Image 1 (cartoon, rainbow, N blue to C red):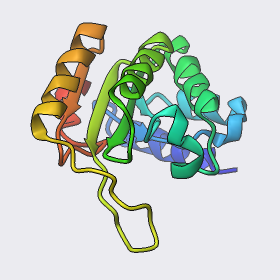
Image 2 (image 1 turned 180 degrees about the vertical axis):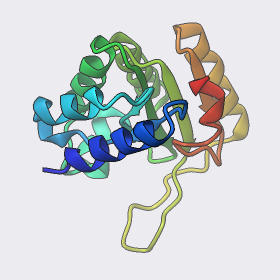
Image 3 (image 1 turned 180 degrees about the horizontal axis):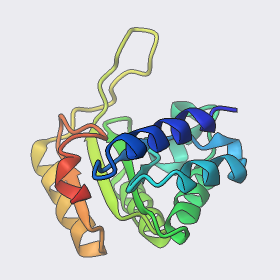
Length: 170
């Protein structure tokens, strides 16, 4: 069902080099929590699941996913005592109020690390960029996130979920 790939890889890396710090970016497993726990049991230090966007745009941006289900996964990961991470893309038409709600929802569900980056349209078949967010706005969201209690926030136009990952896993 998919979780074995993550769990087996994490276990193999830990067996070969127990000092290796691992971050795993995983799907929501469609709320099959047994699959999530199989990955968590493998022992990665950071489990990442990207929200990608605000609640209003979720069905458009992530048609197979559910906003509440993704938050539940982050909550369960946090309750398992694993460091949690999530990321979102800006520039899809979200409002400041919606971004603030997303950050609040993430913190309320135990997210420790946040990444925010500019959405870039990969092909003409994908959603168009609604706006290019000014770098100062990314700085603003970093400050807001830190004040909200995120342990680490990486926010900028070129930030992606693994950007500077080494800074928050040590």
